[in-house]
Image 1 (cartoon, rainbow, N blue to C red):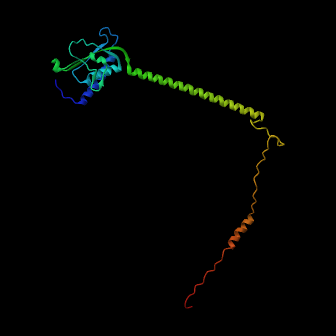
Image 2 (cartoon, rainbow, N blue to C red; image 1 turned 45 degrees about the vertical axis):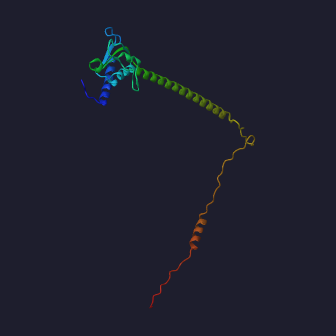
Image 3 (cartoon, rainbow, N blue to C red; image 1 turned 30 degrees about the horizontal axis):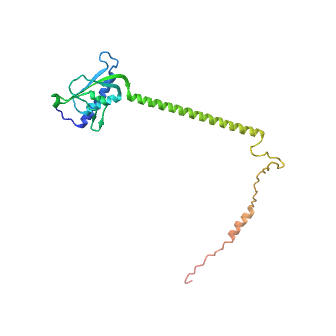
Amino acid sequence: VKVQRTIPDVQRCAHLQKELLLAAIDALNAKSKKGGGCMVYSTCSVAVAENEEVVNYLLSKRDVKLVETGLDFGKPGFTRFEHKRFHPSLALTRRFYPHVHNMDGFYVAKIQKLSDKKKGEEDKNAVSEENVNEVEADGKNEAEEVILEKKQVVKVDGNKHSTKKNGKKRGKAPASKDGEGGEEKLPYKRSKISYNPAAANKSQTKKKTNAKMMKPRRMKINGM
């Protein structure tokens, strides 16, 4: 069967196949006695994006491994394609080509589930636990520092209180009335400024009288 497909179509199918394969593996029982926790992934396509890339993605996300398919014919799957590199166990998968095997193109991989572990989530949980431990350790260190600072402040306040009771200060002798051991500080007195309102009024009147008085000029009218 020949179908015309574009690259976006292949990419969309590959994404869908990854999601379906993960869901199928999660639903599989690893301890099953009948199937042995195995499943077969097969496509009627020879595209690497739908075959090796999908199985390689599964190996990186779940605790699974590839086993022999039990098929005597077909060519082994790719472990490398162009610049891409895949898991070495992908050589256990099988490819079938129309021009070689006189049949439609197929890809077959047999997968065995080892446990229900999810590799990506385990790494995230481990990282999150390390972050929580670091945060707790930082919180304890900060609390200890705050307690030490409070203790130091309490000691300083106690020393100040004791010096006030004794009436002494460190580095200075107590002041006496006769001036021994230090000088007495005299209270500050403000200088009084006298204000005479009569003198201020006189100065203002003098300024007014000093102004020149200008008489109005008489206008001459002709013919008078």
